[in-house]
Amino acid sequence: MTQAPSHTAVRLVEIRDEPLDVGEVVAALDDDAAGGLTLFVGRVRDHDGGQGVTSLDYSAHPTAPARLRDVCDRVAGAYDVHGLVAVHRVGHPAIGDIAVIVATTAAHRGVAFDASRSLIDTLKSEVPIWKHQRFADGAEEWVGLP
Image (cartoon, rainbow, N blue to C red; front, side, top):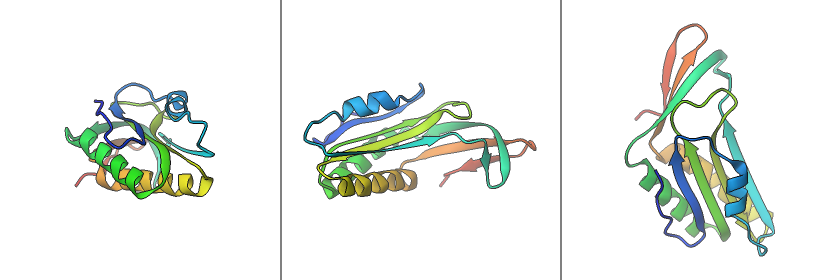
């Protein structure tokens, strides 16, 4: 589910059901003028809230790609970044797989760090992507539903 970025600094915005690749993200941000590149990689963990997680699924609303693009455009417009990437996994990733990657480049590290934090925090709060977790005791939980 790819959406074409509209802000010139936005290099890659995608929600996909295939494994995510950190190398692809770093390559998309290759820029000799950027002095700092920050990268956040969110992985599927084996626990949540003190319970063992055995598996999970991510689902996205049909508007999620456009919402993700909007978040990326807003963050790129609010910070002096050279490049920005956000990719999120849907489907059935395994424990330890990458679930989300956000990254930014800027002339200096402070801007890159601030923009990346804003990007992941805003993505998590505004993009309609939901997690269905299954626990070791047989319980299930949906996370992020409206």
